[in-house]
Length: 193
Ligand SMILES: C[S@@+](CC[C@H](N)C(=O)[O-])C[C@H]1O[C@@H](n2cnc3c(N)ncnc32)[C@H](O)[C@@H]1O
Image (cartoon, rainbow, N blue to C red; front, side, top):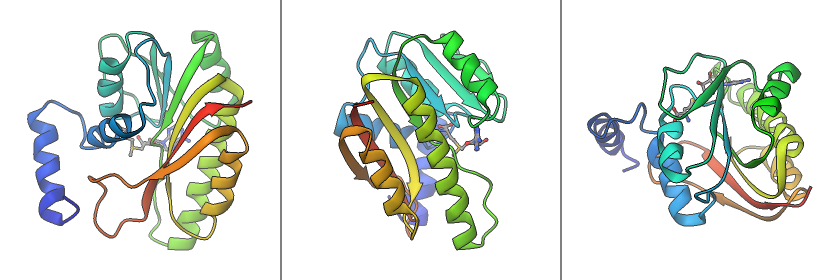
């Protein structure tokens, strides 16, 4: 994995195993390493389209699973969805009205990239901060939060903001992340409020 060949192989494997995207393996790996989702957890997935994390989440918990994305998500049995912007207060209110108790929030959201590294990094961190604010508003104390980010000058600030709200915070570079990518996940456990 990591090489272009590995990338193609993971893509083929996802297709073969019926996942909507190869991103499925990233969440599976994070769960295997960090046990972020328990079988009775209500989970919100931010930036959920096309829905491979939702497919995986559906197998990890028997409680509620809610996906939010700017783009519509094709129907998945036992999964609720909202089409909207995770930063929009109305979307947040709708999510709150659908799920009173939120135990885990996962976020794989990423804005469309322009190719200008520093500009893109700033936009990603801005979206990350909005997702963190969403999590802080919604999560039950003791809850867990997983978020995709990218290494760069603004990353340490985000990392320390996450640390202000969780007792345990770690980073994880998944095996199926493309070689040369600065992508990484923050895995934050035990929300302190
Ligand atoms: C890499 S994809 C997520 C893949 C997904 N985890 C899966 O397994 O299928 C990133 C998603 O983030 C969504 N996104 C970006 N900005 C968003 C925002 N402000 N609100 C909601 N979704 C957003 C995009 O529409 C895109 O579908």
